[in-house]
Image (tube, rainbow, N blue to C red; front, side):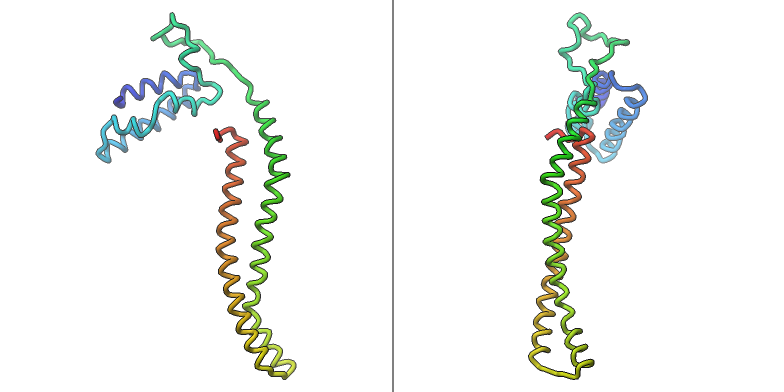
Length: 196
């Protein structure tokens, strides 16, 4: 399918959308075609890459999407001008989604998140072993007691502390990534953008 066919199908499928919103969306897809043509791709390749106009319209319209089976046979090829798509209330869905997410977060998200971050805090606490040579120097300066075994122990503990610090850094990156993904998933779910 070429650009003209794609854009006509998009306009037809998005007929239930507000005209200004539809014009903005169509302009975005027009721009995709222009950029693709500048890159040397064909209109057919760009249309194939963008996907089927019906699927795009279904995603863009959400509950407002009108399937072809809902249009009467006698109106085939005729675009209804004042037809309004079936209205389904998303309020109930949003309320139940919010309640479900609240309990999911309360029963699973919060405990697992606290568990992950407490593991990180424990590992980060053990990384303070890297400071034991400072404690050994303070012990010698203030108490005047030099014991070689304390010095060797502090050097060994410093090495272990450095290893724990490196592990804490890796865990922080991993746990913060997991936490951000979970928060984004919650946000998408509550907005109705998550489909499974």
